[in-house]
Image (cartoon, rainbow, N blue to C red; front, side, top):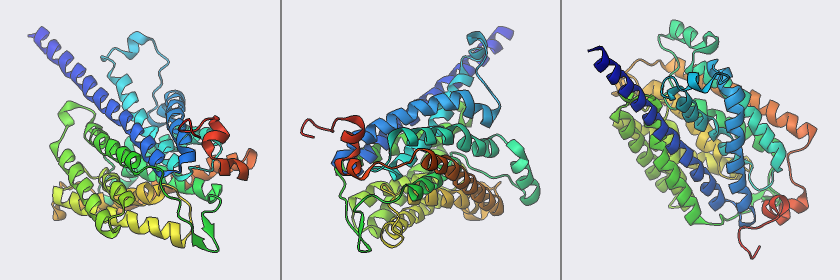
Length: 402
């Protein structure tokens, strides 16, 4: 009997390891989505730079999160023997892999905002600081109960801050850091002339669409696998993810007046927003969350670009920053039993937790990119920007004709 119990326990542990490994691979694949979304949106002379940034940001993110970030967030290091690290069938290692792909989304988000005029190495090191210190600081607060913040919310408002898959922890933090970086970097040369916006057409709608589809598919690993064990998996998360994606698409189609850029970012807006409460909401509630997020993205993108003249190339602040905050707050509305949800959340805790995430992101972003700007500068020269980041930084264009 004891041997049977041991075999069952071994099977359960190895199954959980495989489960979260699949999730890690799905989220890893999302980084190809980030890459192609940016490649399709930027001008042709900056396509190579977009690809290189996403790849190198991921590699550097893995290193700093392995040695520093994971330790800050979860008080765990990997300075043990391989035998000790693999004692649980490597589950703890694969859990790190899964969470690292989330952390690496931070510079991938930032990359889309600062595209076409940013220097390579200064921005790479600033992003590394965000992954190594800024992101894990709030990740540990929200997902590991660090510093007593969650306990205070629970004692005060009856529930801790709930962010199942990272509307605030990942997307909100990434989007608000990106806004700071964009403001410190400044607008692309020629983007605004005599107070009016100059259209910089995307280089490839098919690449943009491919990136959006890769992200959308991978998002089901991002959300569903956030359960981290097989016994925690829920079909509710999958269907809520689907409904929010559809809601974001429909809203962006209507509000964006058939614009293909809005149509393909609309599902991403819905997906960002549903992350926090995807394990709590009723599918109809998730649909409303996605609808609001899709409309919010289009409206905020137009507002920032045309009226506020903030040159956020891919609209990452509206998409991840604002829709992330909406998702954090929405979990405290549509997660309530009164709105068909499972309950166990507090609106005030969601509001305060969301504000806390934004605060950490903004302060951390100003430290990372402000110091980099002061010490070495963030921007390409005017000539380098005119020639394009591909030739100026990487000495090669996207095609042999460049």
